[in-house]
Length: 261
Ligand SMILES: [Zn+2]
Image (cartoon, rainbow, N blue to C red; front, side, top):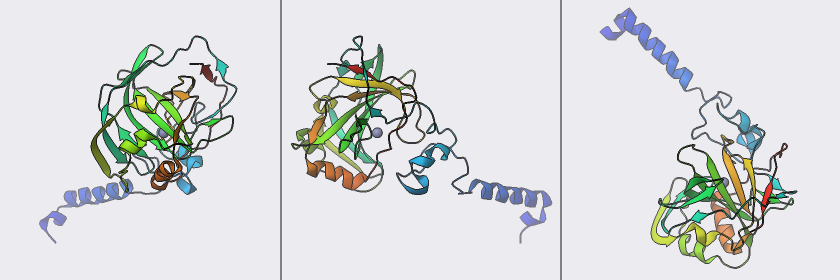
């Protein structure tokens, strides 16, 4: 060996480093870890029932969780159509493993309760996460908007029913990336407005992210009327992201409001 190991102080330091290293490489899933990029699944040991214990700041066992079954909503005459400023974006698709995500260029936003939220991305769930009167739709799109100063989110959920081929999806989604982290860039442009149902009626409630850490920072706006996509189109997403719907969560006294557009 070398002079390095002959120096008792250095040997001690080397030993401490070794112990530190082993401790930090503990892969026991019960060890608290950061929620950032934490692995989760939709079934088995890493499934939704265990998300609350998955990582340090998980709020998945909280009282304001999403998705929910939308039923018994209260009409609220004070609500208005959501002001939407949606501009055309080029197509940026990322296969996130559990979902297919379309990132937006800047410039699109909505106003909710007097606050502006910038549109970041939409992604898809097959089948839908929200239920309406106990029934799923075969697919749901989540348009994620963020308030730049508070960090809070406003997410518009659009339910997708099986029907006519969706022309906008056909225009931008013919080359969905097949493997996790794969991307697809295209100059084809579209606007989030192209996916919004003509009828602006919606349900709204206070909820959470539907994946770990399930942060309770989301104003949900679920459009009452679905849009359509063909069975082929829905199955294409389902084939890539598999079943990725968190079960509905308890309402726990929250109020669901309804706006008639
Ligand atoms: Zn989602």
